Length: 156
Image: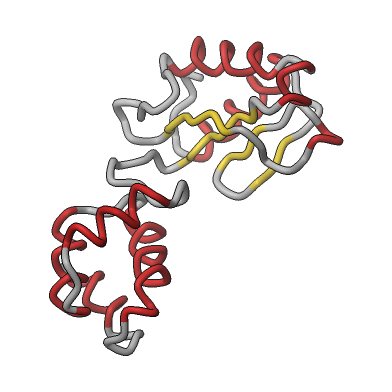
């Protein structure tokens, strides 16, 4: 994997750079492919089990492919009280997608999280790194339509 090699070459062969390397791979592929983990193992001379342990410990890392647009819906107390489940239901309806899944075209994935640290603008969702607050199902429809348009799919 040429991209993985170019990521590895940016770092010294020291285990202290392991998390940064995995984060770079995650950003590149939207998940950690097994082949990439094998290259990291060989480069840093660490057990593959250590890489899997780290990949399953950190929420920002994933062993499963994610969509181009990763939708995270907060279901913390403030968001839940203010209707985050209605947002989640609307996303599920529009994209035929449940939390933990990726759309068939690979454009969207959906996750629920316990907190996004934005209680003042609850209910909140994040798409990749962009925060959306004070949401309702109608606003969710508009936001998802914009993302669908960006990716050339106007069926949302």
